[in-house]
Length: 364
Ligand SMILES: *[C@@H]1O[C@H](CO)[C@@H](O)[C@H](O)[C@H]1NC(C)=O
Ligand SMILES: *[C@@H]1O[C@H](CO)[C@@H](O)[C@H](O)[C@H]1NC(C)=O
Ligand SMILES: *[C@@H]1O[C@H](CO)[C@@H](O)[C@H](O)[C@H]1NC(C)=O
Ligand SMILES: *[C@@H]1O[C@H](CO)[C@@H](O)[C@H](O)[C@H]1NC(C)=O
Image (cartoon, rainbow, N blue to C red; front, side):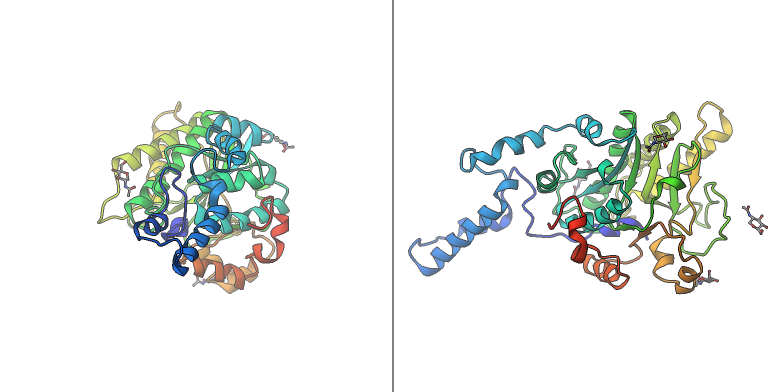
């Protein structure tokens, strides 16, 4: 029941791969079109409309609309180091990784963050060029693309290899950022902030995370990594992680990457990046017991403040009991883009309809 249920629908209309026009375009040109026929004119007209709308973000012949070119070229060569230094506040970044179909979720998430006045340190890791250009057009400097671009047509089907490849990029992005020396909070964008999470990042631990298990825990539960379940593993969410730029945090990220490489996607397992994250946490805790040098200091955040969607959206009694304690709500334990939006709407957490002006991106 991972967070990553978020990315699951191949959206055919994206124009996110700049090196090739989308299939829609090639379909147009394959058919013989008589310019003077009514259909021909209609096709031409709609083509012009589409080009006019999408041109700023697509790779079309140089010179056609050359005034937009310099900006685009600039963002293509904008590096993670430049972006991080531009966006970070007090050595801290909040990051997410987003592809075009999830722009509405990004905007919704940003509104919650803006209400807590933490939006200025948000860096969007764009997984396609459309996202890179659209975010930077509205909010210059707040999106960066770390090449290579994965195939976004295959990246959204939950359980697919493309999806595995897409989510596998997450620990690499985070390692890049901590290697640059920043504290980083990672969030999936199917989350909503109701309060400021930073006061909960107590002490000086290496890695902070939340449990994805739905059973109710006592309010004073331990902040240690929970014991493994019957299957021998923990069920920590890879959806919200805070890391300090410490050797311990780097060790966790490197181990996570090793685990992903060691257990690549298979038809049978259809994994995403979350099991590997759990193995990495368990392994690095074990190392801690054996050697003092590799001490990794982990911190489980309180359930009442950071509940999984499997608890928050399924147990009204618990929600009542813990009223006023909720900080970030994760819209997981549900499949489907439309269903996620509907659930957020039902709970009053779909803020983009009425409050888009509070987002630094405005109306998208
Ligand atoms: C800056 O970071 C330090 C250390 O993490 C923290 O103690 C301090 O409160 C932060 N200051 C602001 C303005 O956020
Ligand atoms: C996923 O990554 C593997 C290894 O890099 C590659 O061989 C494969 O073609 C990728 N698949 C998809 C669908 O992106
Ligand atoms: C939580 O509180 C209960 C009841 O006061 C106590 O018995 C228990 O030891 C506490 N647990 C932790 C982890 O502090
Ligand atoms: C729902 O929450 C209540 C109150 O915390 C708890 O007693 C109950 O066991 C929970 N129900 C389920 C199905 O987890």
